[in-house]
Image (cartoon, rainbow, N blue to C red; front, side, top):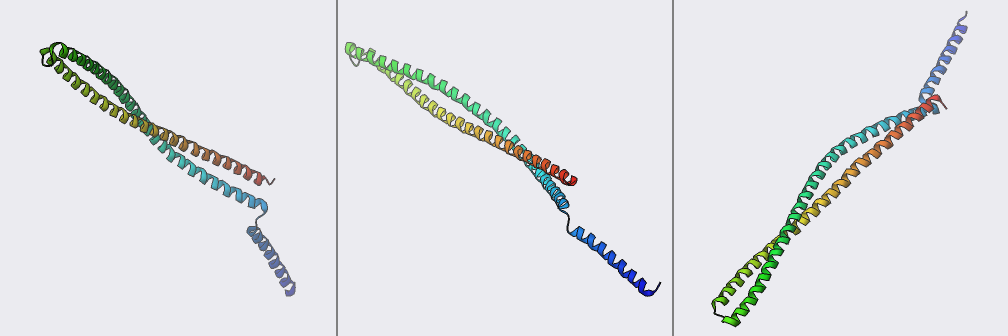
Length: 210
């Protein structure tokens, strides 16, 4: 075997090895469409898992908010119910004071009529007239006191109604927050699960190559 033949065989071997290496390099640098689809599917799945984990973390944080809202809701309801009891109590007081005030007014009207009769029959300076004036004064004092009680009860009633209404607004606000936090996060989680399921299905399809 002469040297020329050896050199020719060496050159051919080197060229063949170069072709093999070049093909392998080209294959690694330029994936087939199927390989590209598989890589994309895996990337989508990783992203879906990240989104799902993030939404679950959001859901857990919102669950803490929900628990806080539930406590607020319970407290606001207790406050609202206490205010309603105060309102009912104020109404009873107001009705009672009105009854007392009306009775005092009837007593005053009666004393006035009695005083007029006694002035006419016995004179303005008579013992009967003086007693009537004393009764009239006492009844007016009672009537004025009852009127002050009525005014006080009205203020209490208005204040308790305002507090009850504020508590009811808080209750409505807490209910909205509760529903919003719970529903939105569950929607996000359900959507991410669907995306993940779809991307896994695409991956299986692309791996089969059809």
